[in-house]
Length: 333
Ligand code: ACO
Image (cartoon, rainbow, N blue to C red; front, side, top):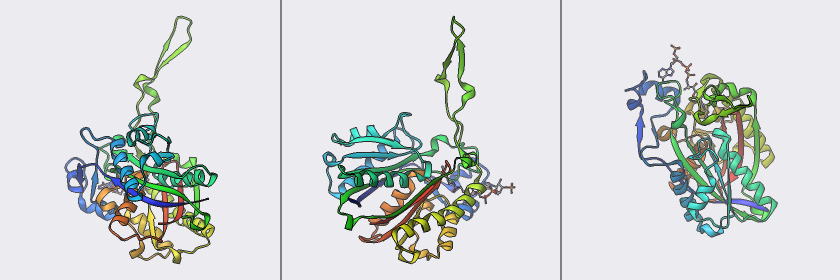
């Protein structure tokens, strides 16, 4: 059993923060941010907007494009590190979409989340019994960014993207090859740790400790940008080459390079290493910044809806980020 991509959708918050806006409250400039990252604007959740609200609209767009009704969805996979609910957000999306015949779960793999979710979905279809799977990438890292830290707050934005994956015959299989990795030794370079110090320890009458974790919160996102940059430029081309080899393809067969949208300099460096010309590279981070697990489906949706990516095109998609995690999927649209 194979699986093919039959729909996509995306949604971003209304509120936009430009580089000039950021320069009002941290010592930075549009010139510095644009030159070092390629980012000019980012969208951030405000007011009563929620991450699940964005994800719901993205999923709806994917279902409509595919011409599939909610009743026919078997599984909803939400890839996120920042759900509205600590216990996960997939089930709420399943409920709100009205996918009453589906079950749902979350995947946490930071900026690699969408690629991990996509490959997971293809495994369920391959195993049999699944016809339509919604894979969502949605993140709101603005919730964990220190808005006084110019080294990180300039990078991130909030968004959601979705694809619908449908079962098909093996000959039409749209997942041509994949490759996944993690390296926990690199966690020190990029994390947002739980603040243990705020956990109160109270003793009961028997002297046994009772933990009162109700003050638990997370630290701001911390990143060693240079290390993450080096890791991405070293590991992503290797991962794409491994996935291409599994697909029996070479870089020259790729119609589109679609990387996690973290930094234009990372995208350019990977494209150069793989000798992929700029006109085959999808990039929309100037408008949205790094939207973590949402960035690949958000950029895919834009490229499909503007007619750049056409039916039958081969896309090399690669995610990388905290964990450290990284992985690639060679897919046919
Ligand atoms: N504006 C102006 N100056 C700044 C800013 C800013 N926003 N940020 C840092 N600087 C200064 C630094 O203080 C430093 O000054 P100094 O030389 O006086 O000490 C100087 O600029 C250089 O700083 P670096 O951190 O060395 O700059 P670098 O060229 O490495 O760029 C950046 C930083 C953009 C963060 C880059 O390292 C990067 O993009 N790294 C990759 C990040 C990434 O891709 N993350 C993806 C995963 S995210 C996830 O998984 C959640």
